Image 1 (cartoon, rainbow, N blue to C red):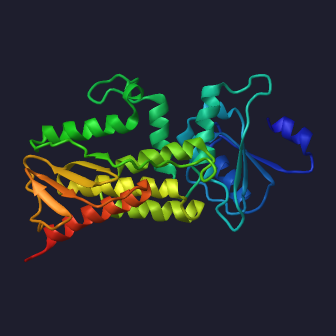
Image 2: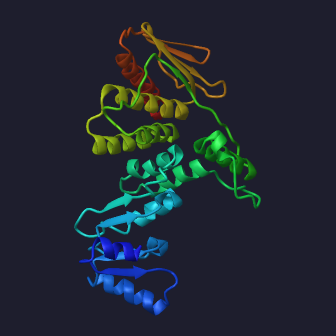
Image 3: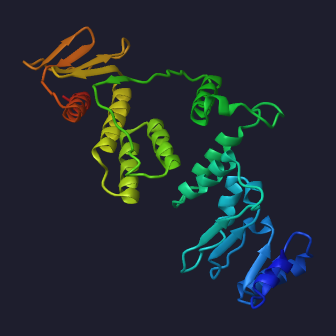
Length: 312
């Protein structure tokens, strides 16, 4: 590769660094390049961590398909550490095109380029390649058969059971005729859209939902109605879970909340619009539009929270 570079760009000075160099030679090569003595650093993956060269802003990775996406993420982090934006190009052999699976794996890096994306990339890498046996020595697992999110959820439940904790695993059933989605016109990359759906399902508190909404607005701009509906549903799911609402249903005539048998409903005062019977609270108020009904359901559940937190 050094000979090819000299033939292609003879006017540029190339500094070489690899693991077969003696420690003194390796240090001298790295320090000289960092100090500006050299135009191109030709190196193996030994530079994956620990290198800080602010003036380096472009990286070319040859045979990119041979690296894991977590490793490529670490490598691309070596450039763009100064005032100029960094760029990383991933190359393969022209006579050996990337397979569909390889290209999908590499495009994860293109989609997950935000600050702090390392964990998301590691999780995606684990999802694609599978995990090892948690309690054995097998290094090829079956997490891909159930999905990483479900695998982590089941593992967390199993650990809590092993600690002797009481595990109550359930999710509220929300049927109010409201549907949400992330359109391609708002988030073009399918990998990022899928990641947003997954992150929304993992949220457990309203504060986490609000934080994700702020992040999405900051990255992609004001949210359209379909995305706003997704966050309305996420708020309803987290709030109903906290309140013990097992089922929230709604239609043109009103909203009904069914509490879990072991969960006492909040002491709501009955009115002309609100009735209570056998763990079910019904709000009789018409709402023909699904988005309007979603807001009505959110206010209904918020009323439960206010009653529950009232010290009177």
